[in-house]
Each structure stands twice: as structure tokens, then as C-alpha cells.
Image 1 (cartoon, one colour):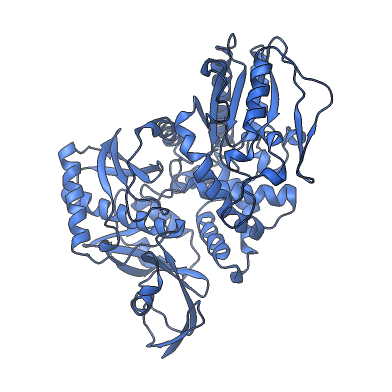
Image 2: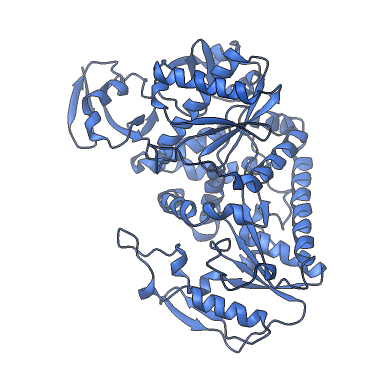
Length: 555
């Protein structure tokens, strides 16, 4: 017998080899959402994995971001297995998410609308029958000789070959189909009853619930197409460079193409920023306001600086305005349900003042600009009055830039909205994508350590609140951007690895979810070959995070 200590302090005596799944059956009435994953001694563990010694045991439920990752992985495996059995001639590539939806592109062949509907029926049948998804534990050596899936086989073997000798490799089996997943899956298909399939672009969309509303599916919004197109363009470009997967990227490094990848990636950024500046300059007769928004660690500041330079080439002087200076005074700041200040909601901005000043400036009038004092929580005022001169435009950076409430009184012809984000096109293999949020988290962690002397734990502990603010105040407004700029650099994980790994390794096991996130990111980085950052130009967006930026004074 072994002792299993639950979060409540209750201790269960169970037979050695008991699975976490079996423990759930005894305490399932204590959960408000389905249990998707176990936490054994602060380590994320599959529900099917046997417990062989005394341990602490907690659980991850579907109403969390981690729980939803398990749900999506399981849905994906159900889809791939059904497609392989019914339409083996069609090869798939898992591309990107669009909100609570996953886009899968046809790499070879395609499916008709009727065939997509047939796949949905097949998946629903798996759910109805609660077909088991078996955890298969193998050694690295066994996996290297095992043929799993021709689509991913070479990439998978290359990735697993990077693992230390003796490392166990966990795979999954459904109806005889085996696959390697970067993450856990549910014990059976019955866990994933909420989903829908439909054709989209050059492939299929799997629409599923969000973790906030896990019991139902929201309608898929077609107006996410602009972000989807940017994802697709980046992915096609990565394929052209033979860097669409981590395995193929590593091969480029092994063949000595580090510098070429850096130069080409930076040239692409430069090309996109020039195109952005040209588009803005084309409207300069009426345009006076450029609004730039994006989630944390997207590289907004460097983008603003580089854009300003290219606008100057086009005869436009960009005057930076920080939305942070328009915060309402501290005592007027809205509160969160827990009583804390909600600095990220749009009501935390003095909208009447912002609109009034923007209107006056666009009309050629003078205004005295505010300067918010974050120490006192009070508004102060800059010396003198400011007036737009001929050839000058306002460049406003802030999280609410895409929200029309911010500039409700400004005519559309006088403004352009730019959405900046790191939309990672690279995957581990054709089935295991890299979450764009994980890349931004590593950027943020490295920057916080480099310039704010924060350890990784501090960044990880605040990240959940940051993400909640993004989902509420930034992501819903993506479709309303006039321009989307993807700040991802194809080589950045190989550079961030040098800085992020020691920070992540220092996260203590006692830190709970922070430790689990650190271990997941360390596993991701273990697959990536490291490269030196000495060849990165000093105006690169990546310099905003690792240091050495020519724009440092403005960051």
C-alpha cells in the first residue's frame, strides 16, 4: 500500500500501482469541471500513469488553460486517427490556433465537405463509445527503431535523439495508431464531447470550447482571417527556409547556416516594417494617428522605434504618445472582483481626456500633455503645450489601441490600427505545434531578468494575470486591425535557450504551477539546438529581450 496526500490534507491508502485516474473516482464530486491531468509531487503526470510510492496528488481540470491543452491534444489525436483510417491518402499539417479553434492544413490531397462531415461522425462515434487512449511507455532506443507515422517519423526520431540516454518516452495509442505528443492526452475519447469540424481555407478547422466556457462551443468567427493569413504567410516562409519544424531547424544549424537564418529572418522583418511604413505614408494626407497594440512581450517598443525610422524616410515624423500617461488617478481606477486595481481594463484610461486631446491635435490646436506618476498614482502635466507640425503624426502604443472606445471620436480615415504579436510558425513536428504564448513567456522572462532583475519565478507567478488581461482586452479586438505584424524570428528559441534555461532550472519544485510551467518549457528547449547571439543586429526585435538594442534608451 502507498499513502496519497490530497490538497485538503486527506491521506488515502491505496494499492501500489493505482492510477491517478482511479483516485479521481473516489473524489470526483469535489471538482467543478472534468479532471484532465494529475500533479504528482508537483510534476504534471498523465492520469494513466501508475503511482508506485507515497506522494502528494493534485489535479488539473478542464476549466484551466493547462486542462484545455490536454483536451485539444486529445481531439487532435482523434482527428488524425480517424483521418488516417478513412482517408490515408491525405497528409495533414497542424498549423495554428484561432481563438478556441485549431487549423489543420492539407499537406497532400484534400477532403471534400462531405468527407469532413464524415470525419466528424467518426470522431463523435469515438466519443460515444469512450474508446480508450492508451499510454505507451518506451525507451529512447525503442522509439528510434519504431515506425509510427511517415508524416512525422523523421522529425520525431530527430527530436527524441536529443533526449538523454535512458529517458522514458511517452506515446499514445488509439485503435492501433501510435503517436508522440508534446503534452498529455485524456484516458479515453469520451472526455472530448464538445467540438465541431468544418472546411476552412486549405484545410479543416476543429472548433472546441474555451477553458472559460468548457461546457459549450462558441461560434467560430470568420473575421479572424487577417491573423490566420499572417500565420499562414509565416508558415510558408518557414517551409521555404526548411525551418518549419524544430527538427528541420536543428539540421540547418548542424549544417552551419546559423548566420544565414539570422540575416534572412531580420531581412524579412525589415521588409515588413518598410511595407507598413509605406502603407501608412500612402494615407498621409488624412492620416494623423497610428495606434499600435499587442500582447505582452510582442516587441511593440522596438517595432515602434523601427517604424518611426521608416516613416521618417517617407517624410513623416512620428511623435510617440504613451497610453499609460492617460491612466485615471489611482482612486478612480476600477477594481477586480478580488478588490485589486484593474489597470488593464479600458475604463482605467481617461477616455474623455484622450479623445478630447486627440481631436484637438488633429484639428491643429495645442494641448498640454499628461504625464502619469506611477509612484504617487497621480496625473501630472508636461511643461509647455504641444501642437502637431506639418509632416508629423502621432504614434500611440498601448494595449487598447484596437478598441474603438479608445478613439471613438476620431474618424476612421484619420487613424490606422496596427496589431503586433509573436505568431510562431514553427512546430516540433507536423502534429505538435509550439504555443505562441510559450515563446512570449520566455521573451518576458528573459527581459525581466535582464533589465528588471526579476527571477523566472516572479515572472511565472504574474503570467496568469497577464494572460487573463490579454484574453479580455486584446485578443477580442485582433480582427479590427488594419495591419498585422508578426514579430517572431525563426531562430529566436535557439537564442533564448541560453538565457532562459538557467532561469527555468532555478524555479523551485515547491512553487506548484510555476514549477510545472518551467519544466514544460525546459522540455521544449531541450529539443532545440542553441546558437550564439553575437550575429544578431543591434536593431533586432530580439535585442529588446536579450540586451544590446540600439533602442535601449527608448525601451
